[in-house]
Amino acid sequence: MPNIDLYDLPDELLEHIISYLPPADLAAASATSKRLLKIANEPLLWRYHCEQTWKHWEEAEKFRSELRAPVVEIQWKEKFLQRAKRDRWISSTLNALLETQQGRIARMQDIADLGYDAKDILLEGCNTPATAEDVLARRYHSEAILGLMNRKRALEIWRGLHTDPYFPLEEALGAYDLFVLGSRSGDINDISAGLDTIAQRILAEYPDYDTLSLAQKAESIATYLRAQGIVGNTGTSAEEFHALRNNYIGLALLQEPHKSLPLQSVAIYCAVARRLNLNAWITKFPFHIHAVVLPGPPSDLANYTETTPIPNESVHMDVWRRSAPADLDEMHSTLRATGIANDLHDQYLGPATTREMVMRTGRNIMRSVEEAREHRDNPVPADLDVDAAFYSFLWSMLLAGSAADREINIHRRRNYLPYLLEQFQAHFPEDVGLVSRYVVRMFEGHPQRGQLVQLLEELAAEDRNAKPVRRRLGTVGEAAGEGAVKYKVGQLFQHKRYGYEGVVVGWDPKCEAGEMWMQQMSVDRLPRGRGQSFYHILGEDKSRRYVAEENISVLYTQPSEKMMRIAGAYFKRWDPETRCFVSNVRDEYPDD
Image 1 (cartoon, one colour):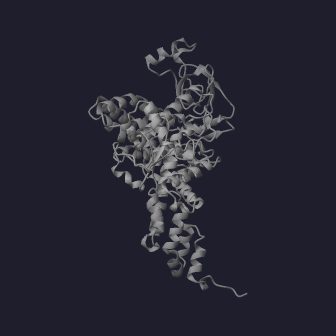
Image 2: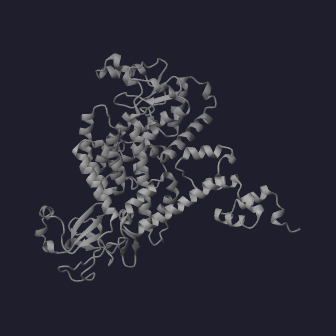
Image 3: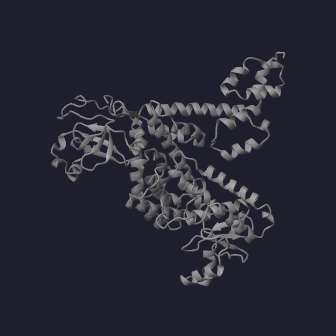
């Protein structure tokens, strides 16, 4: 068989062959000849690499529309090179923030400001191999930046609810998912794609869908969703009903089993129905969540008000309990039994605003959080953060609350503010920019504004300035005495009195807490008093505490799974040989 030279092949085949080259190698190959240079600059080739290299784009809808456009209309090579340059900047910025505590929060905010253009790199960081030198730090901070990015998107959604009362409900409820999402799939784009897929499957299941009546369409959608276990009471026990995970539309839609509260089930039903051109919305009906399917396309709500009569041909659905339409006479009877006059029934049988359902979901989440904290023996999935869930409730109450009565609104915000600031400082310090952008303006003309501005300036200065260096006066393990610090940063221990697992993240040669704190904690009643070393510690429950040296009992066992998940805030990795965490705060504690 005669030898075939590569250049004997037609351009189309050459283009297909070099499409298997990584982009860097493609650039190198293009420098070898004018013909390869021409082929390597084909827009179709670079569109392929844009699509294959990155899964997430900040403007996802725009990117999808560009993929559908004629290939010559988009400068695909330039788009690829810009995105690759951005990736390099993200990687170098992530590396820099892992090197020092100084400017760490500012760098996290800079990366998060890029939105989903940073998501692929951050997900890669969340999956850093266990053998990496800085595995815990890289995983922790990558996920923390993803969390900041997601919360920023959630707050943007909730802030806009006052100007768009019928904003897509699945997106507004999906904002709660963003607070607990971490590195899992299930963001707003994933939720939307999942709903699109379900709608297409229903059309395949009912090929004559377009010929059905309004009621038949409404029932067909409910029948399919219930048969697939996506909505409805799928064996949820009374004990599990208010489990935290059941409040999240993304978990109900994208994860097995598809358990949810009625609100999330009906929201999924309405979102799918609207994708199938039905005007479906959750109603204001009390006690139980229903959907109303109005005649006309979904856009017909533009002129809807509370006094708009509900058309007779409307269909009410209780998809949590059944596939068939609800009995309207029964619904009227329920309203009358609660003392609601007949002329007000249309208000309760008509569409509720998205803001109302967001507030209702927030209250349900708070109830689940309270139950989770009260019954700590009840299992809460490890990937659901109770603190993050509580934080989402506080933000939603501040942003989505009614602005109709300014005095009532400011009173409610004053009540929630201390809890928000406590959660923010304890668990989400990277949210300085979000608090500055959204919370400060809420208290314009009130004393809280000045206090907030001062707090945020102090936190920004603390992040901006280098940490003061703490040098040891004695060696690790030296006999306790004035100025001698026995334990080092990274030491795993169990509290002698309370039994919890913790790790040392800092130390003082003697107690440096305020006098009031020392009196409240009875420090002077300790056998060694206030003169012994005290340690800043991270507990397995994410708490930060200040512990006397005499209460520390060193552990030489493998850290718990909980501790390994959160240790990256201060440490690079766990060293099985020394049985200590490797410090990532040596700019502050260089001797450890």
